[in-house]
Length: 591
Image (cartoon, rainbow, N blue to C red; front, side, top):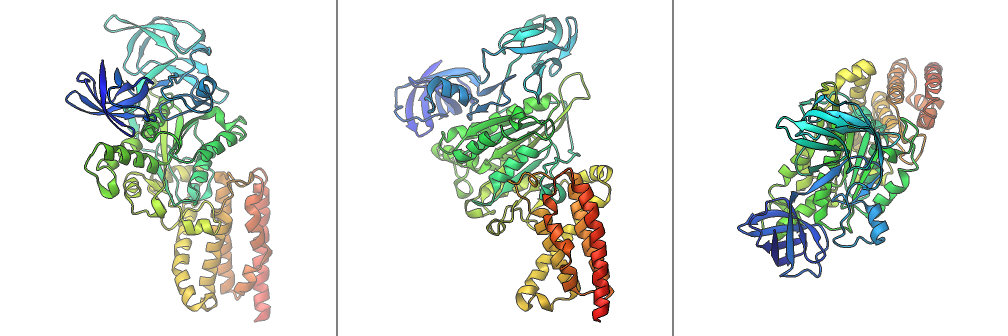
């Protein structure tokens, strides 16, 4: 079916003669066959969101509908790839058209020429249902790609054969309950705006280990949970998201660069192939999919990029993998929604954003979770963790995108410009951040790290909150007027902030910290606080306690290599006890 363009307004095109088209159908616009998607219908007139530059397009141009919604191709070949917002492979585009993306270029999301080694796990005569694994393909050394029956199919395997196949060649035949035959291929397609089905969703109960101490110890996110990183320009959102992508203990990472600067995606492309996956010693790119829709790319495609990324993530989740989606940033996506809403002349909401902003954000975040995957294997569970950056103008967290996100997500890591200016990174403000997963994760912490870990976490938070109260007094009367106990509280809080929470994302020895290491570091700081309070009661001078050599060694403890820290920390703990005892003796002599 074809229609004619009657109006062009930036990325919005209105065409008539499309009475039989459906909303969300993909269309091709003009002589260059620009890719677009129908947003709404009014009689035979369709409002179309075009995902490419529309300059030169005018009334009278042809519009041809494909009759299908915007979909992604799912199969071997996605890992290590970098796509634009509508799953066009950028490396293939460079080979075909050069460094600039040619308008209207059509390239499939998966390579049609490459052959993959398929090993079947079922045989002829087996009964299968949607989601069942019928075979495997070693996609990379880090990812074993599981080939699944498409969700809506079920029946009997008539034939299946191992060997080398492209993604479009049939590997087997399935006979459904109606007697119809279906070819089973390595590839399947799925509409991006429809969540992939699952059997059951479970509450998240396992923490996502990120290697970032302020995240893992104070504000943890669960596997299958949701988190947001809001913060002003220069506060470290992108580096924080890079750290989450690099070191999170997940099987697959989907990194979506949505509307951010191109140099940030360039950093990812340069760093990830060089970084070593701590789990198997291979490059991190071997388990990463990158989606780049940077600020110099079409605005409309930003909205699609978020859905493209989460659909790819759901596909890997359905294999039983733990997947993390890192979206940088949802504010740029919301700005794209605002632009399209304005051009559609919809009634604006707060600050010009559409009234449905909150529901669209909810639709994205609610696709996360821990699920029992489709198929007859009841043991196969996967998780999808959604982490989105928010870039409020001027760092104002009262603006609509930040407020809507805060109401949806369970973990909020509030970045603070004042901390960033003091070179305290990650610049997460411990007084403004929160995690609602603490209660559900407590059984895991108690079982794997011991009940003392959560006790120490609560104690550390109490010390930091007390420091905030004492700082108001210090500003009025000075630090020396405080009691020795309050001075010790400030010193302990300083150790927690500088020696524990502060972390260098560019220093190899400090960019990742295991749970065991975090546990010992925090325990040592709180032991220092406890022993010093006892020493003050015995007559030790606060100045002597603050000057012991252990204090300097504690500041350098985070630079001890991961494999050496147990012995070093044990030695430091003994030295701390001995030096505090000496301060007690000195205090008695001075008295």
